[in-house]
Image (cartoon, rainbow, N blue to C red; front, side, top):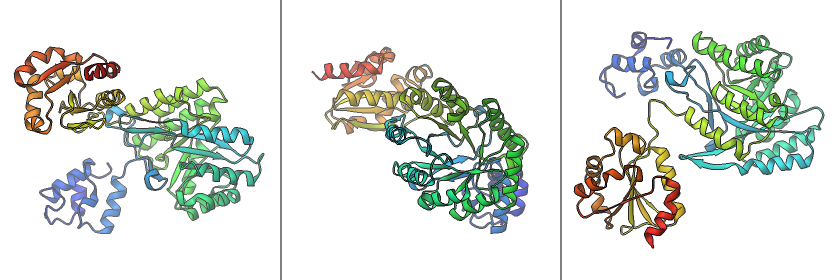
Length: 449
């Protein structure tokens, strides 16, 4: 942070009113300096002081918001180079590319393929969030505008790849209310493109022949008062694109150069030159190395399953375990008389186990214990998922008063707890489940029979 706690305290109202949740203005100022609370939590800072502090304490990378409503997404806002230092903030988004130079059959096939990858993993929807609609002089303007309309009908955030200000203006008239990205400012057209983007109120992507021209064009747009920008990493080579994303991120975070502190767009579709295997490798590379938006030719399940898993792991806070709220989760229309199944609150465990239980079709009450967000074996080894802790949780949550069934299925990997649990939970029949969640479907059906 550019300012220390004492610097912030000097601008504070010094009322010690405690309305912000801190005992004193000094304590509040220290929290703001550490980044743990927002300056807006204090209602008495003057607007001038807020403007000064917000600028000084803002992340080195600017947060750019695109899309609207439930499709709104934040890009950038990062504060570290490596996830283990603190956490990454805004996850990489993926876009499928379309172009008005494509024939109608190819366009229709791509539009039909985009919604096919859409599933849930650990409570997060995995799907193609954006569509990159590229304008080529080889195709007609009318076809491009028609393509923009078709892409908009899929209800994704659009990126309009267009370097012609007049065509860009016409395209934005069709979709500007959905807050797309206009990607097409360069050294020769940035003034005109800046006007088009600002008039439409959308983020502007900046391109350059090399990293130096890119930086100079961004700086020129900043002088025009536009800081709603994204950086296009270019298509010269994989090496150059990689150097651009890494060097801009490093310059922003390590050197405090805010002209470099903007989210990036990576054209993996162009860099891969039609090689699907290379494109998959580039998707992984730029998810880890600072691509805010990565554009691909298409997204298949073969690419999506490992890729979205990688992204989800990368963009979770390493200081906070992925956990769900402990409690009772009725599945398949379960009531008080349905059999009980228990496991830990580790999110991955919950979603895998609950998914298999739902597939079985057997009504059951899934009881999630407070195990600190750890997996079954890890929490058992740490003493957080033991006969004592399970019995204590059952007592605190009054499980016996909420369900009538006295059959309790425990994970097979902690079968050793059966005897202790029967002693701690008198009247309960402890049943040992299989070791693997995938075996639960047959197990539950056999149990019901």
